Length: 199
Ligand code: ZN
Image (tube, rainbow, N blue to C red):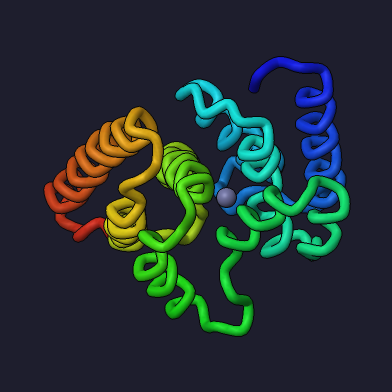
């Protein structure tokens, strides 16, 4: 952020708005963290890689609002302006598609995202990869976690215009996560159970 009080004011307004609209939601992970923690983490990842444009940071805070909190793009545009709404629109999956197809669209559409949206998409995936490892959803098998890692890498492979540092962080988080998951698989095999039920 450039640090002007108007910028900080807009960012805090987005944060307050998102906290309110996502207030009944928790992350899918077994820790059940408040949803807003994820939004703050995504914005923090951007800022700590010096992606400090206030409108991109607002879009980061609002990136799941349409998909998960029944906020409309018109509302976002009215409160936060056209550019923030455009970035959020790019990052919102089409709700009429089945989940598997939304995943395909994210891979196929990644390279057509604007640079602004690619920054947020990569930060979002970093946050999600961390979550899968540190607080996975209760019923996710090891194979499902590995599949998520594979899919996230495919999406990010299309985000070549995202900030270089963010892309490097994604690679590091992906690599260390894959190592941990492969070790988990190995340990499960040694126990002789194949690991699926336990993970
Ligand atoms: Zn997200």
